[in-house]
Length: 165
Image 1: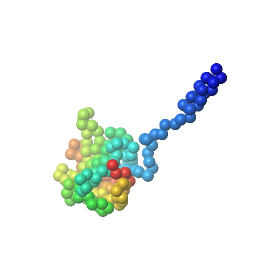
Image 2: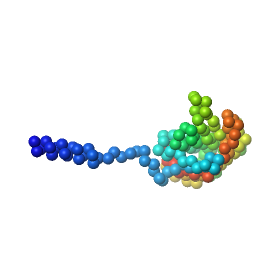
Image 3: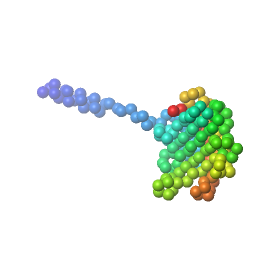
């Protein structure tokens, strides 16, 4: 009987002393922040929708999901990507673009503010300050025009440091 009680106490002790590590803890070394019309926003760096990926060698895609769909998603495609330098988006940027999107097509709340050619007369810049093959770091700003809302949003003070996929 004594052994049974000791065994049960050991099981209780082990079960309550074990801690599951969380994979959703943000790594403070990685971030994506910006101001949208002067209001600070930070992306959820633990989201599967926040990443940097290099497609076909000459296209860098930067995606960042804000905490909710209402807050939005950033997406940038930098074509002709060759590494650390400035990339113009929108007018004068060729096929490179920056977008800030909110809402949902399904419930009729979708809007996308773009610096993109064709479809917008706005412009902006993404500056890649570091690309070591595993981490991409830089700054950005652009004015995005929404054809749906017929408004412009100023995206300023953008900073990011993200792992490559």
